[in-house]
Length: 146
Picture (cartoon, rainbow, N blue to C red):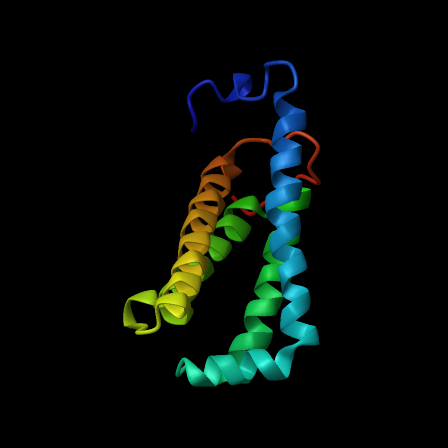
């Protein structure tokens, strides 16, 4: 139980600001899934290059995760599951796909480090949404397991 949970969204505009945050965060992640389905061959090639097992399944599966969990955050459906799944995915993909520490080329190293850091701060945001999943979200569909 979160202390003062009934007052969490009591201040003027906080519910609307939280909705905007959900739409931006979840919506962008859900939109990113489009690339997994429209550019599958290139993404599978990159996954193979990075040594991922079952690269096609990894690309399609991660696209599905981004789509459903991102949409879940945006609309307020299953926020604990959606947030935790996104956070875990972003952490794992950051480490496995954006291993900047193993790059020799400075430009490639910088590009991978930027992607790695984006994944890390995205994971932080996803885990924050998961932590707030125990609270009733304003303007949400209100579907939850926990």
